[in-house]
Image (cartoon, rainbow, N blue to C red; front, top):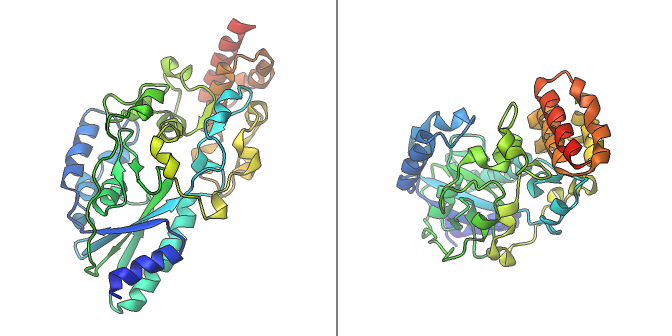
Length: 345
């Protein structure tokens, strides 16, 4: 077997759902799309997206010695209906990927094991592994490596995996055999666009992060625009609506990593309990979770928006004490929540 074939066999043995390989020069159109995205301000507060754009659009500039990019897919398909919690108004909805351990840690360990195996096969070679931690455009690279295509919701889709999977990559100085890029298979379907509560897609294959619930609940600091708060429903961390609506999920692979299985207390957590979290309680509850990185104040802000959208007057008891919170954004969210609930009581 060739090294490329053995590498792919080893990647599957390590637990990855799919593997593909491309050159470091295979995403010439990605730089243009990124430049247009940033020039229109659609990145919102994510200032890092405008930094080192030459690296993002040209992987070879990131590491000139690299000859191949190994793209790997890690399935995290939910074993429950991710849209069902949206109907439980006294509870919050957390994105499926964040309902247990931080995938960055899990995927990176697997990538490093595979990388060490590769170096053992080719002594003197070098690797670098990335999981959302460098200016690397994983989705265009994954399409170039044949893993899938960027759908109309801008996320990666696969005919074999659906769209419930993480991406990781290994840059290497070894010149491997390259795969054929995947082509678009969305057809006339607009399910992902139609379900978006905030109309975050100006057009198919385009996203305005400033209206995206995932961005608003995770990346956006400070108060959210009042015109968007009522559209956020009970989303308190991330949003899976466009992913869940995709018909290709009928082919979604089962998640093999137990660390991605949803914690029972995060499938549909009670808003009143979450609103009562102080900083220590927040850190304890979300230790080892990707949720921890947004901090207690931003998380409780999201919880208060969900309380305001709940139409449950009894939840005023959970919001009222937070009108005196030390954080100005939390106080603003608490007052907004009470205003909404007073209109229905």
